[in-house]
Length: 169
Image 1 (tube, helix red, strand yellow):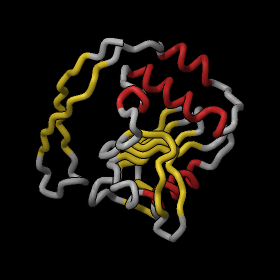
Image 2: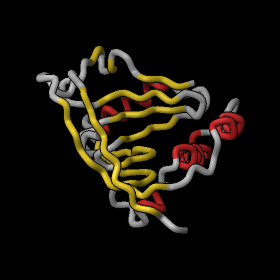
Image 3: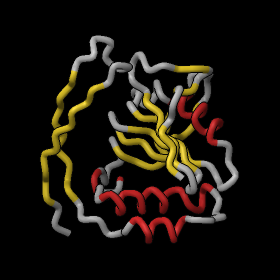
Image 4: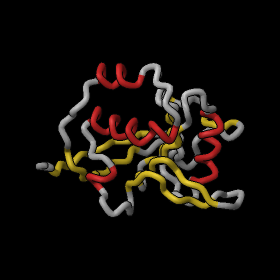
């Protein structure tokens, strides 16, 4: 497989992350991958899925990568050092657990089964976030819904939850 390296510039303007309202510009190099799954194919595959969390979450995430043209964890990080499934984490309340997907400095994802409680999944990520080096995005999914919450310093929080998570169904 030929992997092209492409520099991508992101501009982030976030009054929650930066009380001064400053604009931050940073550059990230990542391999560019062609998309191999259309949005309609993705929806058709996952709509109404009754698979359990363990049966589905890795394939669901791999399909998301294919949908947006991003390398999978195994393609980008074969040694599982910064982008991996089942990232070991220490809970803030004590004990250990695993984040279903972790991409250092980018996000952590916790999946639940089809009828799983996404609020519980989010609270689980809150327990792991320090151990996972505070990823800026905390994402939960049950393969039908994907909910994305910011984890920037100074993000408005109510009862442990972001005021307005971005949710896709």
